[in-house]
Image 1 (cartoon, protein in one colour):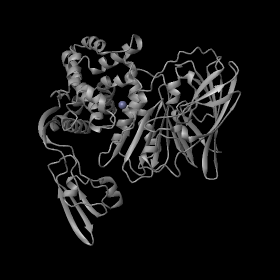
Image 2 (image 1 turned 90 degrees about the vertical axis):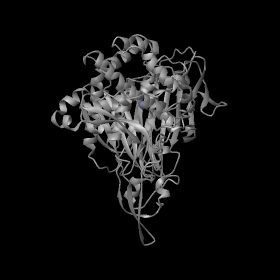
Image 3 (image 1 turned 60 degrees about the vertical axis):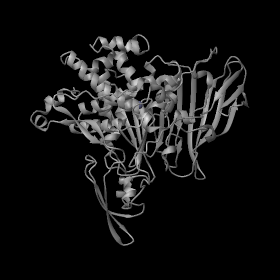
Length: 578
Ligand SMILES: [Zn+2]
């Protein structure tokens, strides 16, 4: 299910969809035993191997037979049960089934069962591969895992929504602090939570720099490893600002705890990977690489899913959640940047630049005319298809916002509709297009269904020329996505040309891997200017120039900030976005 986003210069992977679509399976089992799962975690280093021993205590089913489930698949990683060894049981006998991730326990009715097992990391050495990020990471100095990666549980507990009691006891090496989705610095934890929430939780301990910021409703913690071009406290304050701002938008301060972790990956590939989790976010970056705004944008997007998730839609087959991705992903992308603009994390000129870039990517996309059936069919594994609902939804959100503002004389905006839609799903019933259509008509946005049917047919979504307010006008330019054809970031870092795309213009112009990089002049904002690279090869100096794009130039709508209006009255320009 994981999709690597190779964008030549960077890899940005976000596992938000896999997280939000955890299957809700109902079991027709009559289960009367107390609903408690107690786990005791003991972490130790022995013979250069780090191991997590887990003791699980629970009550077996009255029916004298309990199926337990081992970790199997998560975030594109398969056969996670292979990391588990030495399973022992007290109070039952254990038998294999035909499925490696399922075991059967036989026991007296409703008897107490204790299960012990060890978990290890599936590779040797440090974290050096983006692919392993969501697997249990067990190092000498720290560990990090997601519930899905290590927890064994009785299968009959899977449909427990909120009345399941969890007890966690932690035995970690001296001086290590424990942090997870349910608290920080707490070696004994007891709480009630749904099965899905805990299985999608983040757990870590060891040599992290922990920082804490108090916001309304609770605390935002960050756990950071490695050296970065920022102070840990500053990072923590920015994340807290993002979370606080979203809680204010939704007027919802119900989650007392939020944890974000950041760890370095020792790799030659430039990029970042991240996943939204219960009360938290886990991210990893190439060592020394920090992308700045894209990082805040991803955190903001993932945090927004706490409210705008596929769960609010009436979809039984989770494969059909794709019909609402224009909303759950596209509108979430819209709000990620908009809410960041409101707290000054992105400035208006950069907000416009981001939107323009997205428009170039959308209108140049080979997938732009895909029907919803084609999107559903090819979503995983085709980057252009995967991005499409994000792009369509983000344009639609800007257009609808302008439409509602215009119809209501700026008294209302998409914010009102957005909150109403999500609130409806909480207070009444799950949503479908008809219900959304009814809610939208309250805001004078008639015929919502027609707009969505156009998307389903693969018709282009054109950005409304007035959709960025009174200080921004629209033009059409001949454009293609910026594409330098090699890994600029890593090449600059190593002073050696790296990852030249053999089909790109850089290669045609003579750029080759391993040439010594002397200087580079690039204009990512203006593809009509050539990139100019000076390299050394076998003592000879070469100057290589070429236009930094690959696709055909197309006429594409772009937004331009009226400089004089922006300079004379920025508040009036920003008022549109409030
Ligand atoms: Zn998402």
